Amino acid sequence: MAHLSITTSAAEQIRRVLEERGHGLGLRVSVKPSGCSGYSYVLDFADEAANDDVAFKEHGVSVFVAPEALEMLDGSEVDYVSEGLNRYFRFNNPNVKDQCGCGESFSV
Image (cartoon, rainbow, N blue to C red; front, side):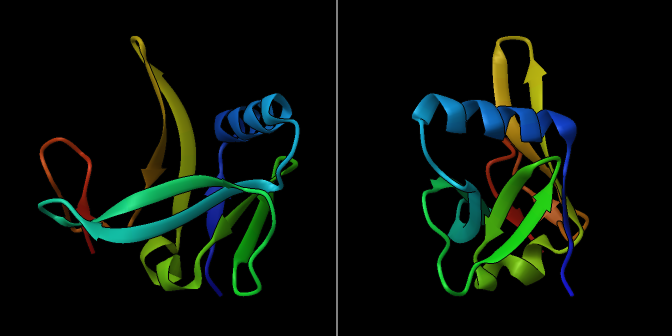
């Protein structure tokens, strides 16, 4: 069975955005072919769960993963980081074999 973990920092940000929006179930993650290395992460907030989504729950929040992304995301950690003025979700993905110089795309 696939596994995905959520850091405390990511959970706090997901919770904060859902509260600001006033609705939603959690974060939805998928991947799409893109960039120079092959794939990029696609993030959105889930207002409802799709029938085939796989849900991971940790620290009181849920992350929904599209089934076609499960193999590429298996074992990943979803984190939320602040670097200078930049704040963003970061994936610590053990399946990544290579990524582009800007970090926008990856290959598995």
